[in-house]
Structure formats: C-alpha cells, structure tokens
Length: 166
Image 1 (cartoon, helix red, strand yellow):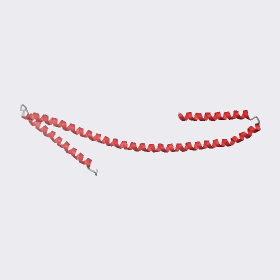
Image 2 (cartoon, one colour; image 1 turned 60 degrees about the horizontal axis):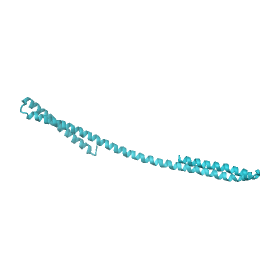
Image 3 (spheres, rainbow, N blue to C red; image 1 turned 90 degrees about the vertical axis):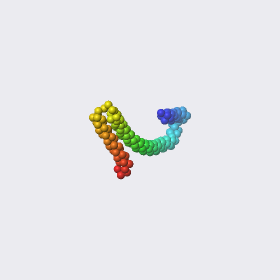
Image 4 (tube, rainbow, N blue to C red; image 1 turned 180 degrees about the vertical axis):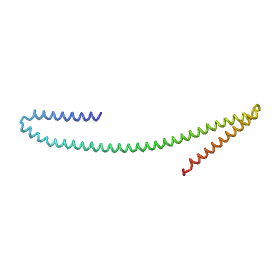
C-alpha cells in the first residue's frame, strides 16, 4: 500500500511538471521557431528519462531475482525443518506405541494377579469344598503360567529391540 502511494506521488509530480513546462513555454516564448528549438533540447531529456526507466526496470528484475533466491532458501530451510519435525514425530509415535504396549501388558498382569489373589482366597477359605479348592489351584497355575509366558515374550521383545542386526 505504501509503495502504491509513493508511485502515485511520483507519477503525479511528473505529470504536473510536464504540464507546467508546457504552460511556461507557451507563455514565455512567443515565436514558434524558438519553441521548436527548445523542444529539440528536450529530446536529450527524453533519452535521459528513457535510460532511467530502463535502469529502473533492470533494477526491479534484479531485485525480483534476489527475492526469488531468498524465497528459495527459506523454502529449503522450511523443508529441512519439516523433515526434522517428521522424524521427531515418528520417534514420539514409536515411544507412544511402546508405552501403549507396556500399559496393555501391565493391565493384563494386574488382571492375572487379581485372579491369583482371588484363587488364593478360595484355596485358603476353610468353608470351600475340596473340589472348589482343586479348581482354584488349577486356575491359579494356569494364571501363573500365563504370567510366565507374558514375561518371557516381553523379555524376548526387549532383546529383539536392542539387537543391532534387526
């Protein structure tokens, strides 16, 4: 917006100078031959302004090229930052997946421990029949075996994760 105001002011000033120069020439010089000679003198000024316009155009193109190079560098920096962010996100995702896996294992172990505690109560209850006590012992062994299996699989998974070959 500010650049447009500056451009408008410059263009307006040039038009005003052009109009005033015409008025001054017409009012101050009465002879048309002198006016023609004076007009020929402005041919040099026209060449000067054309050269300045060309220089401005070249400068604008050069600035645009520099701006494009800066934008390209910024895009490259942003791309590298996005790659870093993606890698960090992937590591975080893997850590969360491992945490979920361990939470599931912990919940399963807690559930099995609760079952074992229940079976122990059934086994130690003097009011229960021998049949209920035997079933509770059998179920307790199954729960303990399942805990052992989970622990072995967990330890095997840890070894696989730390193995540099895989």
